[in-house]
Image (cartoon, rainbow, N blue to C red; front, side, top):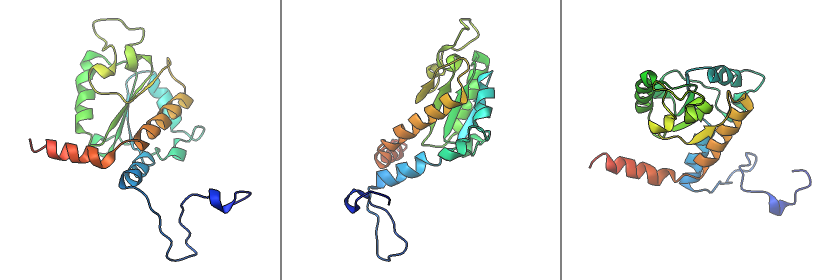
Length: 178
């Protein structure tokens, strides 16, 4: 405990004393589990994908945040990381992957091209993935460094921490019957 007084210690579990209990809200427990076990679906479309791959290396160690399980199956992922230039030809594939991901799901637009089309102002490039799917976190840069991606994912964790999990699940459940 160090120099903390007993009054400043928050609720915790002590395995040495039986009968202790942890009291929390269901939303807080669900959000804690979700934010600490994000499974990214890497959608590497251009040069930003190299930085995305570097984030998973031992130098940056994304596993510290519970996100080391990169899934290449949309049905096992809950965070879509779109990194790179999204062409109109590729947009339908990205949308299909997004639709196959189970709820709850989040999207991260990594890099200038995924966020706004970047330097490509042409008829072939989608000017931001947010025109196709909802984006939760934008990461700027061309290409952004792995540290920027880690910062963006921690911002996503803070966003997940504040969500009303059970209320949103009830809404999705009951909307499916209407």
